[in-house]
Amino acid sequence: MPRRMLLWIAFAIVHVWVAAAGWWMPNQPMGDVHLVYEPWSTRALAGGGIVGVTESWVYPQLALVPMVIAHALTWVGGYDLAWALLVALCDAVAFWMLVGRGRSRSRRAAAWFWLAFAALLGPVGMYRIDAITVPLAIVAVLLLARRPALAGALLTAGAWIKIWPAALVAAAVLAMRRRLAVVVGALVMTALVVLLVVAGGGARHLLGFVTMQTGRGLQLEAPVSTYYLWGAAFDLPGWWVFYDQDILTFQVTGPNVDVVIAAMTPVLAVVVAGIAALGLMQAGRGAAFRALVPPLGLALVVALMVCNKVGSPQFHDWLIAPLVLWVVVDRRRARGPALLALTCAALTQLVYPLLYLGVMTAEPVAVTALSLRNVLLVALLAWAVARVARVPVRARAPRAIIPT
Image (cartoon, rainbow, N blue to C red):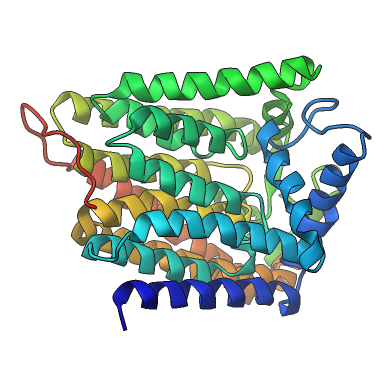
Protein backbone atom coordinates (compact mmCIF):
# COMPACT_ATOMS: atom_id res chain seq x y z
CA MET A 1 0.00 0.00 0.00
CA PRO A 2 1.43 3.44 -0.93
CA ARG A 3 2.58 5.43 2.08
CA ARG A 4 0.42 8.39 1.13
CA MET A 5 -2.71 6.21 1.00
CA LEU A 6 -1.87 4.74 4.41
CA LEU A 7 -1.61 8.24 5.85
CA TRP A 8 -4.99 9.23 4.43
CA ILE A 9 -6.62 6.08 5.81
CA ALA A 10 -5.17 6.92 9.21
CA PHE A 11 -6.41 10.50 8.81
CA ALA A 12 -9.97 9.24 8.27
CA ILE A 13 -9.82 6.77 11.16
CA VAL A 14 -8.48 9.35 13.63
CA HIS A 15 -11.04 12.00 12.68
CA VAL A 16 -13.98 9.58 12.81
CA TRP A 17 -12.81 8.24 16.17
CA VAL A 18 -12.23 11.66 17.73
CA ALA A 19 -15.53 13.00 16.38
CA ALA A 20 -17.46 9.99 17.70
CA ALA A 21 -15.75 10.21 21.10
CA GLY A 22 -17.37 13.58 21.58
CA TRP A 23 -20.74 11.81 21.84
CA TRP A 24 -19.87 9.07 24.31
CA MET A 25 -17.13 10.49 26.53
CA PRO A 26 -18.22 12.07 29.85
CA ASN A 27 -18.38 15.75 30.83
CA GLN A 28 -19.61 17.08 27.47
CA PRO A 29 -16.36 17.47 25.49
CA MET A 30 -18.47 18.86 22.63
CA GLY A 31 -20.53 21.11 24.91
CA ASP A 32 -19.14 24.43 23.72
CA VAL A 33 -20.28 23.69 20.17
CA HIS A 34 -24.00 23.45 20.91
CA LEU A 35 -24.07 25.49 24.11
CA VAL A 36 -22.32 28.64 22.85
CA TYR A 37 -21.10 28.39 19.23
CA GLU A 38 -24.49 27.48 17.81
CA PRO A 39 -26.46 30.14 19.75
CA TRP A 40 -23.93 32.88 18.91
CA SER A 41 -23.93 32.06 15.21
CA THR A 42 -27.70 31.49 15.03
CA ARG A 43 -28.32 34.90 16.59
CA ALA A 44 -25.97 36.55 14.10
CA LEU A 45 -27.68 34.86 11.13
CA ALA A 46 -31.10 35.89 12.46
CA GLY A 47 -30.05 39.53 12.79
CA GLY A 48 -30.21 39.48 16.57
CA GLY A 49 -26.73 40.86 17.15
CA ILE A 50 -23.18 39.98 16.18
CA VAL A 51 -20.78 39.13 19.00
CA GLY A 52 -17.58 41.14 18.71
CA VAL A 53 -19.40 43.84 16.74
CA THR A 54 -22.60 44.76 18.56
CA GLU A 55 -21.18 43.66 21.91
CA SER A 56 -17.81 42.77 23.41
CA TRP A 57 -16.82 39.13 23.05
CA VAL A 58 -14.37 36.74 24.65
CA TYR A 59 -12.96 35.79 21.20
CA PRO A 60 -11.49 37.90 18.38
CA GLN A 61 -14.02 38.78 15.70
CA LEU A 62 -13.08 36.23 13.02
CA ALA A 63 -13.91 33.39 15.41
CA LEU A 64 -17.56 33.87 14.48
CA VAL A 65 -16.88 33.06 10.81
CA PRO A 66 -16.38 29.26 11.15
CA MET A 67 -19.26 29.14 13.62
CA VAL A 68 -21.49 30.62 10.94
CA ILE A 69 -20.05 28.49 8.12
CA ALA A 70 -20.83 25.32 10.09
CA HIS A 71 -24.54 26.02 9.58
CA ALA A 72 -24.09 25.20 5.89
CA LEU A 73 -23.33 21.59 6.88
CA THR A 74 -26.13 21.06 9.40
CA TRP A 75 -28.18 19.17 6.81
CA VAL A 76 -25.83 16.22 7.46
CA GLY A 77 -27.00 15.74 11.04
CA GLY A 78 -27.20 18.83 13.21
CA TYR A 79 -24.76 21.49 14.31
CA ASP A 80 -22.44 19.26 16.35
CA LEU A 81 -21.78 16.93 13.44
CA ALA A 82 -21.52 19.92 11.09
CA TRP A 83 -18.76 21.36 13.28
CA ALA A 84 -16.85 18.07 13.26
CA LEU A 85 -17.12 17.91 9.46
CA LEU A 86 -15.94 21.49 9.10
CA VAL A 87 -12.88 20.79 11.24
CA ALA A 88 -12.15 17.59 9.31
CA LEU A 89 -12.42 19.41 5.96
CA CYS A 90 -10.07 22.18 7.12
CA ASP A 91 -7.65 19.58 8.46
CA ALA A 92 -7.81 17.70 5.14
CA VAL A 93 -6.67 20.78 3.22
CA ALA A 94 -3.68 21.27 5.51
CA PHE A 95 -2.93 17.53 5.58
CA TRP A 96 -2.93 17.41 1.78
CA MET A 97 -0.46 20.31 1.69
CA LEU A 98 1.73 18.69 4.34
CA VAL A 99 1.84 15.19 2.85
CA GLY A 100 1.96 16.16 -0.82
CA ARG A 101 2.98 13.14 -2.86
CA GLY A 102 4.21 11.35 0.23
CA ARG A 103 7.85 11.29 -0.94
CA SER A 104 9.33 13.36 1.90
CA ARG A 105 10.19 11.27 4.94
CA SER A 106 10.17 14.30 7.21
CA ARG A 107 6.73 15.38 6.01
CA ARG A 108 5.35 11.89 6.53
CA ALA A 109 6.80 11.90 10.05
CA ALA A 110 5.15 15.28 10.70
CA ALA A 111 1.83 13.94 9.43
CA TRP A 112 2.02 10.91 11.72
CA PHE A 113 2.86 13.20 14.64
CA TRP A 114 -0.20 15.34 13.91
CA LEU A 115 -2.51 12.32 13.75
CA ALA A 116 -1.07 10.81 16.93
CA PHE A 117 -1.46 14.12 18.75
CA ALA A 118 -5.07 14.52 17.63
CA ALA A 119 -5.93 10.99 18.78
CA LEU A 120 -4.21 11.45 22.16
CA LEU A 121 -5.75 14.85 22.82
CA GLY A 122 -9.21 13.57 21.97
CA PRO A 123 -12.50 15.34 21.28
CA VAL A 124 -11.67 18.58 23.07
CA GLY A 125 -9.11 19.17 20.33
CA MET A 126 -11.87 19.03 17.71
CA TYR A 127 -14.89 20.55 19.42
CA ARG A 128 -13.38 23.95 20.21
CA ILE A 129 -12.68 27.01 18.07
CA ASP A 130 -8.93 26.33 18.47
CA ALA A 131 -9.36 23.39 16.07
CA ILE A 132 -9.96 25.79 13.18
CA THR A 133 -6.68 27.60 13.81
CA VAL A 134 -4.59 24.42 13.63
CA PRO A 135 -4.83 23.71 9.87
CA LEU A 136 -4.62 27.43 9.14
CA ALA A 137 -1.38 27.68 11.10
CA ILE A 138 0.06 24.51 9.55
CA VAL A 139 -0.52 25.82 6.03
CA ALA A 140 1.03 29.14 7.05
CA VAL A 141 4.22 27.70 8.56
CA LEU A 142 4.73 25.49 5.51
CA LEU A 143 4.53 28.63 3.34
CA LEU A 144 6.81 30.78 5.51
CA ALA A 145 10.01 30.25 3.55
CA ARG A 146 8.59 30.72 0.04
CA ARG A 147 5.51 32.90 0.55
CA PRO A 148 6.20 34.90 3.75
CA ALA A 149 3.60 37.59 3.05
CA LEU A 150 0.84 35.03 2.53
CA ALA A 151 2.02 33.10 5.59
CA GLY A 152 1.93 36.28 7.67
CA ALA A 153 -1.60 37.01 6.48
CA LEU A 154 -2.82 33.47 7.26
CA LEU A 155 -1.25 33.44 10.72
CA THR A 156 -2.78 36.84 11.44
CA ALA A 157 -6.18 35.59 10.32
CA GLY A 158 -5.69 32.75 12.78
CA ALA A 159 -4.82 35.26 15.51
CA TRP A 160 -8.13 37.04 14.83
CA ILE A 161 -9.82 33.69 15.56
CA LYS A 162 -7.73 32.73 18.63
CA ILE A 163 -4.78 34.89 19.61
CA TRP A 164 -2.06 32.21 19.84
CA PRO A 165 -0.89 32.25 16.15
CA ALA A 166 0.46 35.74 16.87
CA ALA A 167 3.32 33.92 18.61
CA LEU A 168 4.28 32.30 15.29
CA VAL A 169 4.07 35.68 13.56
CA ALA A 170 6.46 37.04 16.17
CA ALA A 171 8.85 34.11 15.71
CA ALA A 172 8.92 34.66 11.94
CA VAL A 173 9.45 38.40 12.25
CA LEU A 174 12.27 37.92 14.76
CA ALA A 175 14.08 35.13 12.94
CA MET A 176 13.56 35.53 9.18
CA ARG A 177 15.43 37.67 6.71
CA ARG A 178 12.22 38.36 4.83
CA ARG A 179 10.54 39.64 7.97
CA LEU A 180 9.20 42.71 6.19
CA ALA A 181 7.07 40.53 3.94
CA VAL A 182 5.63 38.76 7.00
CA VAL A 183 4.87 42.13 8.60
CA VAL A 184 3.18 43.42 5.45
CA GLY A 185 0.97 40.32 5.21
CA ALA A 186 0.05 40.63 8.88
CA LEU A 187 -0.75 44.34 8.59
CA VAL A 188 -2.88 43.89 5.48
CA MET A 189 -4.94 41.14 7.13
CA THR A 190 -5.33 43.17 10.32
CA ALA A 191 -6.40 46.23 8.34
CA LEU A 192 -9.06 44.20 6.53
CA VAL A 193 -10.47 42.84 9.78
CA VAL A 194 -10.46 46.25 11.45
CA LEU A 195 -12.17 47.88 8.46
CA LEU A 196 -14.89 45.21 8.41
CA VAL A 197 -15.54 45.51 12.15
CA VAL A 198 -15.56 49.31 12.08
CA ALA A 199 -17.80 49.36 9.00
CA GLY A 200 -20.20 47.12 10.88
CA GLY A 201 -20.33 49.59 13.75
CA GLY A 202 -18.16 47.58 16.13
CA ALA A 203 -15.27 50.00 16.69
CA ARG A 204 -15.87 50.23 20.44
CA HIS A 205 -15.83 46.44 20.75
CA LEU A 206 -12.80 45.85 18.50
CA LEU A 207 -10.49 44.82 21.36
CA GLY A 208 -13.16 43.54 23.71
CA PHE A 209 -11.56 40.09 23.73
CA VAL A 210 -8.44 41.61 25.32
CA THR A 211 -10.23 43.41 28.14
CA MET A 212 -12.46 40.41 28.87
CA GLN A 213 -9.45 38.11 29.22
CA THR A 214 -7.45 40.38 31.50
CA GLY A 215 -10.24 40.42 34.08
CA ARG A 216 -10.37 36.63 34.46
CA GLY A 217 -9.42 34.68 37.57
CA LEU A 218 -7.31 31.52 37.78
CA GLN A 219 -8.88 28.79 35.68
CA LEU A 220 -8.80 25.31 37.17
CA GLU A 221 -6.40 23.71 34.66
CA ALA A 222 -3.83 26.53 34.40
CA PRO A 223 -0.33 25.61 35.61
CA VAL A 224 -0.38 28.48 38.12
CA SER A 225 -3.60 27.06 39.59
CA THR A 226 -1.91 23.80 40.60
CA TYR A 227 -0.87 25.25 43.97
CA TYR A 228 -4.42 26.28 44.84
CA LEU A 229 -5.87 23.04 43.50
CA TRP A 230 -3.73 21.02 45.90
CA GLY A 231 -4.88 23.28 48.72
CA ALA A 232 -8.44 22.36 47.83
CA ALA A 233 -7.46 18.68 47.58
CA PHE A 234 -6.14 18.81 51.14
CA ASP A 235 -9.34 20.60 52.19
CA LEU A 236 -7.48 23.59 53.60
CA PRO A 237 -9.72 26.38 54.91
CA GLY A 238 -10.28 29.09 52.29
CA TRP A 239 -9.05 26.97 49.34
CA TRP A 240 -11.71 25.72 46.94
CA VAL A 241 -12.90 25.29 43.34
CA PHE A 242 -15.89 27.29 42.09
CA TYR A 243 -17.81 27.90 38.86
CA ASP A 244 -17.66 31.38 37.32
CA GLN A 245 -21.07 32.07 35.78
CA ASP A 246 -19.79 34.99 33.66
CA ILE A 247 -16.85 33.23 31.99
CA LEU A 248 -18.46 29.75 32.17
CA THR A 249 -15.35 28.05 33.58
CA PHE A 250 -14.22 26.46 36.83
CA GLN A 251 -11.71 28.53 38.79
CA VAL A 252 -9.70 28.23 42.00
CA THR A 253 -9.30 30.54 44.93
CA GLY A 254 -7.26 30.72 48.10
CA PRO A 255 -4.91 32.99 50.07
CA ASN A 256 -3.49 35.94 48.08
CA VAL A 257 -5.20 34.74 44.91
CA ASP A 258 -5.89 38.32 43.80
CA VAL A 259 -2.17 39.09 43.96
CA VAL A 260 -1.41 36.06 41.79
CA ILE A 261 -4.16 37.01 39.34
CA ALA A 262 -2.77 40.53 39.01
CA ALA A 263 0.79 39.24 38.58
CA MET A 264 0.14 36.72 35.81
CA THR A 265 -0.26 39.19 32.94
CA PRO A 266 3.04 40.98 33.72
CA VAL A 267 4.75 37.60 34.21
CA LEU A 268 3.48 36.45 30.81
CA ALA A 269 4.72 39.66 29.19
CA VAL A 270 8.18 39.37 30.78
CA VAL A 271 8.60 35.70 29.81
CA VAL A 272 7.49 36.29 26.22
CA ALA A 273 9.71 39.36 25.94
CA GLY A 274 12.68 37.40 27.27
CA ILE A 275 12.18 34.57 24.77
CA ALA A 276 11.72 37.09 21.96
CA ALA A 277 14.94 38.88 22.94
CA LEU A 278 16.82 35.56 22.94
CA GLY A 279 15.45 34.72 19.51
CA LEU A 280 16.36 38.14 18.13
CA MET A 281 19.89 37.78 19.48
CA GLN A 282 20.29 34.37 17.86
CA ALA A 283 18.95 35.69 14.57
CA GLY A 284 21.45 38.56 14.74
CA ARG A 285 24.24 36.04 15.23
CA GLY A 286 23.27 34.33 11.98
CA ALA A 287 21.03 31.44 13.05
CA ALA A 288 19.37 29.77 10.08
CA PHE A 289 15.60 29.78 9.59
CA ARG A 290 15.24 26.02 9.82
CA ALA A 291 17.20 25.92 13.08
CA LEU A 292 15.67 28.92 14.84
CA VAL A 293 12.04 29.45 13.82
CA PRO A 294 10.61 26.06 14.96
CA PRO A 295 11.96 26.06 18.54
CA LEU A 296 11.41 29.81 18.88
CA GLY A 297 7.82 29.49 17.71
CA LEU A 298 7.27 26.55 20.05
CA ALA A 299 8.83 28.41 23.00
CA LEU A 300 6.61 31.44 22.47
CA VAL A 301 3.48 29.29 22.10
CA VAL A 302 4.22 27.21 25.20
CA ALA A 303 4.96 30.40 27.16
CA LEU A 304 1.43 31.56 26.33
CA MET A 305 0.18 28.30 27.86
CA VAL A 306 2.42 28.04 30.92
CA CYS A 307 2.10 31.68 32.04
CA ASN A 308 -1.61 31.97 31.30
CA LYS A 309 -4.36 32.39 33.89
CA VAL A 310 -6.49 30.29 31.57
CA GLY A 311 -5.47 26.67 31.06
CA SER A 312 -8.21 25.22 28.89
CA PRO A 313 -7.39 21.71 27.61
CA GLN A 314 -7.93 22.76 23.99
CA PHE A 315 -4.89 25.05 24.30
CA HIS A 316 -2.82 21.97 23.54
CA ASP A 317 -3.99 22.28 19.93
CA TRP A 318 -1.53 25.17 19.77
CA LEU A 319 1.44 22.81 20.01
CA ILE A 320 0.69 21.07 16.72
CA ALA A 321 1.75 23.68 14.15
CA PRO A 322 5.19 24.63 15.55
CA LEU A 323 6.04 20.98 16.14
CA VAL A 324 4.85 19.96 12.66
CA LEU A 325 7.21 22.61 11.25
CA TRP A 326 10.04 21.42 13.47
CA VAL A 327 9.59 17.78 12.42
CA VAL A 328 9.51 18.82 8.76
CA VAL A 329 12.75 20.81 8.91
CA ASP A 330 14.70 18.80 11.50
CA ARG A 331 12.95 15.67 12.71
CA ARG A 332 15.96 14.45 14.72
CA ARG A 333 16.06 17.47 17.03
CA ALA A 334 12.26 17.64 17.10
CA ARG A 335 11.88 14.06 18.33
CA GLY A 336 12.25 14.82 22.05
CA PRO A 337 9.89 17.82 22.19
CA ALA A 338 7.38 15.97 20.00
CA LEU A 339 7.30 12.95 22.33
CA LEU A 340 6.95 15.23 25.35
CA ALA A 341 4.07 17.07 23.66
CA LEU A 342 2.36 13.75 22.86
CA THR A 343 2.58 12.81 26.53
CA CYS A 344 1.05 16.16 27.49
CA ALA A 345 -1.78 15.53 25.01
CA ALA A 346 -2.50 12.08 26.46
CA LEU A 347 -2.55 13.42 30.03
CA THR A 348 -4.80 16.27 28.91
CA GLN A 349 -7.39 13.85 27.55
CA LEU A 350 -7.11 11.85 30.78
CA VAL A 351 -7.82 15.03 32.75
CA TYR A 352 -10.54 16.24 30.39
CA PRO A 353 -12.97 14.74 29.80
CA LEU A 354 -12.21 11.43 31.54
CA LEU A 355 -11.24 12.56 35.05
CA TYR A 356 -12.72 16.04 35.00
CA LEU A 357 -15.31 15.39 37.67
CA GLY A 358 -12.44 14.43 39.97
CA VAL A 359 -10.55 17.59 39.04
CA MET A 360 -13.59 19.76 39.77
CA THR A 361 -13.93 18.15 43.21
CA ALA A 362 -10.15 18.26 43.82
CA GLU A 363 -9.87 14.47 44.04
CA PRO A 364 -6.16 13.57 44.58
CA VAL A 365 -5.76 11.09 41.70
CA ALA A 366 -7.22 13.54 39.16
CA VAL A 367 -5.25 16.44 40.62
CA THR A 368 -2.07 14.36 40.38
CA ALA A 369 -2.69 13.68 36.67
CA LEU A 370 -3.28 17.38 36.00
CA SER A 371 -0.21 18.36 38.03
CA LEU A 372 1.98 15.94 36.07
CA ARG A 373 0.66 17.38 32.81
CA ASN A 374 1.47 20.90 33.99
CA VAL A 375 4.98 19.91 35.08
CA LEU A 376 5.64 18.35 31.66
CA LEU A 377 4.33 21.49 29.98
CA VAL A 378 6.85 23.57 31.93
CA ALA A 379 9.54 21.07 30.93
CA LEU A 380 8.54 21.50 27.27
CA LEU A 381 8.94 25.26 27.63
CA ALA A 382 12.39 24.81 29.18
CA TRP A 383 13.40 22.39 26.40
CA ALA A 384 12.29 24.78 23.65
CA VAL A 385 14.06 27.77 25.24
CA ALA A 386 17.23 25.72 25.69
CA ARG A 387 17.09 24.72 22.04
CA VAL A 388 16.77 28.37 21.02
CA ALA A 389 19.77 29.24 23.19
CA ARG A 390 21.84 26.41 21.66
CA VAL A 391 20.83 26.88 18.02
CA PRO A 392 23.86 26.79 15.67
CA VAL A 393 24.90 30.25 14.47
CA ARG A 394 27.13 31.43 11.66
CA ALA A 395 28.10 34.67 10.04
CA ARG A 396 25.67 34.29 7.14
CA ALA A 397 22.66 32.00 7.24
CA PRO A 398 21.61 30.19 4.04
CA ARG A 399 18.30 30.83 2.35
CA ALA A 400 15.40 29.26 4.23
CA ILE A 401 14.19 26.02 2.70
CA ILE A 402 11.41 23.74 3.90
CA PRO A 403 11.70 20.17 2.52
CA THR A 404 9.09 19.31 -0.13
